[in-house]
Length: 96
Length: 484
Image 1 (tube, rainbow over the protein chains, first blue to last red):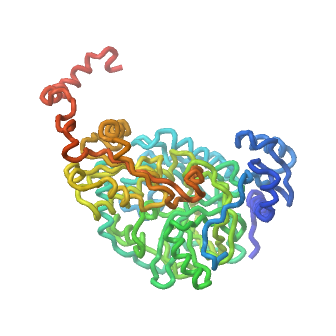
Image 2 (cartoon, chains in turn brown, green):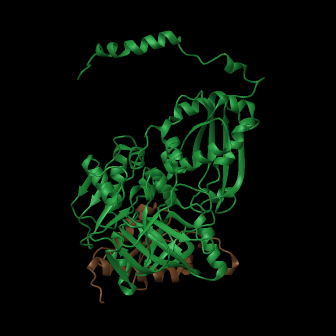
């Protein structure tokens, strides 16, 4: 049965895809933007804060400002990139 | 008006409304921060006292017609006490809950249940259709913060429940922050051994006691649903899931069914966790969602996390204390009470012990400390004796440290113990996931070193204090401005 989604729900599915792209390119993003806030949309980084020396909330405001009039905030995925490599929660070798 | 026992979230919300403790928000709220910010505002409005901020029920969620979201319904000890029908007085609260736990009884299985009024399978079971709020602006994708995870040990049949955090990573994909300090992680290891996916059911919007018992640490093999029966005096009604043999509360608002995959991972975070700061991006387990069942007009339950005070800290910290007291009472004589400050989520615990026992045992405080530090999210324990007038008041606890504690003899440090992988101070202990722990012994020292205490505390004469207490109300009447 086809599922009717609202605009917000459709936007959330776009956000899922943006997050998937972010996860798939994480090592590269960590190398480029450690500690910076970025926005991802449509397989691209569409906004980047100016410096990781700024407080996170200031970086977030910078990114939101860059997105104004260009992207729907419900669709864009905004997050902070790690400064360090991704941490692997410990599992037995069998699972890795 | 609903009364104890409250067997559904709806009953509990009705009780809160009837008693002026539920604020219904009909204005439209945005999931990108509106729900979290009002939960924060309410939590800060009265801290944890009897006048603590109201529970909230949102009726107009942007993009999610027909849904409601509730939060802060179990915030504050007085609400937890009401939900369990025990005293909110901290001198009695923990002891009364422990006594109820000892009356545990198994749940009762039923065949029809409100939680199955609506069933979404396959493509229909799309997580984009569930109104999961964001907690922080850097979260990336929203996280389910009040999801009670159910998992069953494949060989013994033991079902374990616990609140876990799930990142909504796709229409049918969740990340779950499972780590090695948790019982459900140990169960998942059994599935890894077998190379099989682990069936999991996530309950959102259970009755208050189900949330409460999910926060109590019990021994391996003990199902928390049995405690529900002990607390309420009647068995919890449970129903089997659609896709597994897991049992879930029949009155739950939403049940997400799926399986944890034994060899696939998801990137979790960043999320504003109970350790106050955003978490590191971490590879954790992946949950594949197969089915979602719910009640008609469902209520999504949200729990604020991040900087305290939050409902998460309130319920988690308080109920961890129950586990500690139960363990202590079984292990030692002379245990009087304990206190877990709400903001600490169990990290720092004050234990009050009988002076007579503490002085007779060698290193009694250290032994008490080791018993308490069985949980992973733990920093330290302060052990005081009955000289401490009020262990819930930090001023009185610090008085005991000032007068009885000598760091060279009374401070025990246990370095590099396993921790939550969420606390930003962990690398400073040597490695991410490590944490040092401390025990402060602020009890009276043994004979030979206790002369100063035997001289007694410096109060005004007892007879005069009793007189003063009687006179005081009358004297206050003559205070300038009295009665204004």
